[in-house]
Image 1: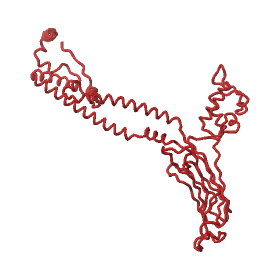
Image 2: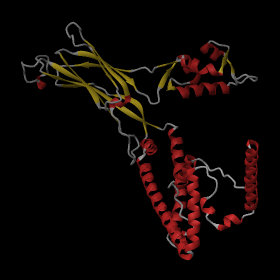
Image 3: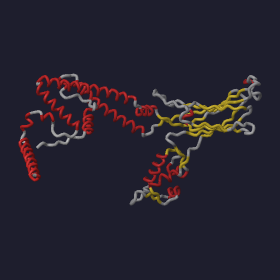
Image 4: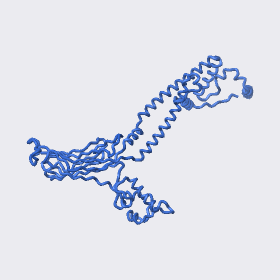
Length: 414
């Protein structure tokens, strides 16, 4: 009896075929070293590349771990306050008289400038260079003047913006011919953000200004040192006299500790500088400068961030990988063609018969469900199989029964 064979659907077969033939393999075909001795060097390079990729990945992980630990460099920022005066008509020193100019009204320009001092210990390493405005969120200048006489306003504000660049200072120009008291308010820009600790909490952890993670860690260290965790339930903290006075609770759950600490924090105090703008000289500078301790990211850290964020080298590697895959695929195709022609040259008849059979099988796979292999039916060996006699017997039996039914039906009608 003829057997029915279920073939996979056309879409599934084609998908598997395409997936199998996708040119992503970078391995050389087997036995290719016999034809291309240099291919052994390629195999060694592939192995070396795997080791190199592994080493690079470990280094990238080390860099990412190092970036998670802030490394800051402490430097000193020196701030200078000064002003210039122009077109003043009176009150000037004899040695610094201005040229009289009746066309322009008297005016002055107030300047807030700053620069980083060189480190105490000289080093050959490159030092980070940041400008004054990069250290502050905002700079506010308040002038002590009569608002009715000077309607342009006595408060000038500068706020940092992501799109604006940094500068070495700010300048404010106003009209006037009298001395003016100025108040400069500098709001520091800490990265990461720092908070001012309340007096009660500062007494507990001996910190006045710090980041929130450090403050929480110090409170937790205090709890562990004084063994304030409950023996039965580690989530409960039994307050001692200082904690109860600070948080107002006899016992604290660990989940609410962060919120309680946050209530004890406030934004850091701004830096306030006083200065008197004088117009009796063409240039006047404060008798003293102001030094502020600042923290900078190290140059090494910035380089590490650039390495992690850089994608240009990865793109170049991907382009080279694609070229390697194409070359290997070309070698594979050439190897396949060579094997094909070599087998054909050795036994053309047998090779063509096998090739036709293979092509017929592939055709059936594409067409879907079929009964038998059409190429096999053309061969005499197909009819010499054991099941042929049984199939012929059943076929003749069915024909005989059909003929008997036709005769019986004709007899009844007669």
